[in-house]
Image (cartoon, rainbow, N blue to C red; front, side, top):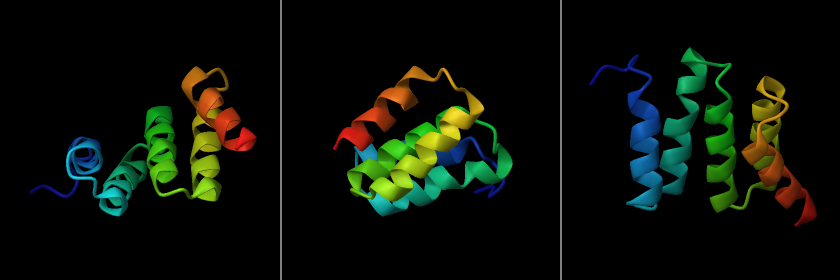
Length: 87
């Protein structure tokens, strides 16, 4: 109900992705908090994982690299990016 309540978007994105399999809608919701919290590494990592479900490796890699810019030792993002590059 409140468009600026940024914590609601990741939760709704998770619901859309995992329970309803609405991939494009989940990605849109997951992108919204980046306006509010552009430095959050988990935001970009999760967005990269979501792009993987749509097989968009270019956007997936871009998001994973943004996560790594925020934390160079972010193990999950490193592992995901290596997997993308190997595939």
